[in-house]
Length: 241
Image (cartoon, rainbow, N blue to C red; front, side, top):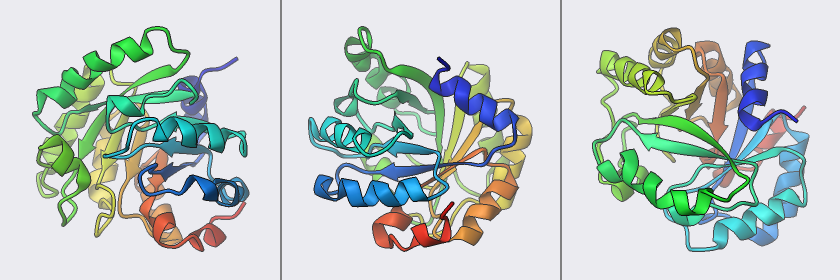
């Protein structure tokens, strides 16, 4: 059986457009899972990400268990902290916040996670995480006590992404942050994509089908959308299969 990473790599090599719906356990009511996932299943979504910046203990696992009852889509953890790790998911993006300089989010939290991952069946996917300036202070900034990379310093963004790849990251995640006022620009995405040989994930500020298509056309292999559905579930009508 192919692993999650292998499946994504194969899809990317075939030119498929991948879409992950991000569910934040802190903002989602588990009793709404069945109706929400029904809409996800009817959409062009290919993956479900679960995670947030601040989530109470055990909430993530309960949500993942409920999600898995209603879909065959792969469920991947996008954790903001060690407490969000659960063996009930299919894989975990082992995120390294390489846009910041807080050692806890470069290696410290990862060490803390080893005790949970050592005997786990979770597929662990090393992922470089680059937070890019979005016009507002994001929860990621507040929790990690780091600053995003400035949008106008494109070469720094490119070099940071490439450094992550050279360090052995399997995916690179460009993030404008939850609730970003604007999505990342075509220039940023396309120039980073040109530099990388690994899949490029892009998220933050994407609130319409047009912005979704622009993000794909700019070079994103996998797009992540979360806030748009939190604010307006009718967006699902625009991305039905």
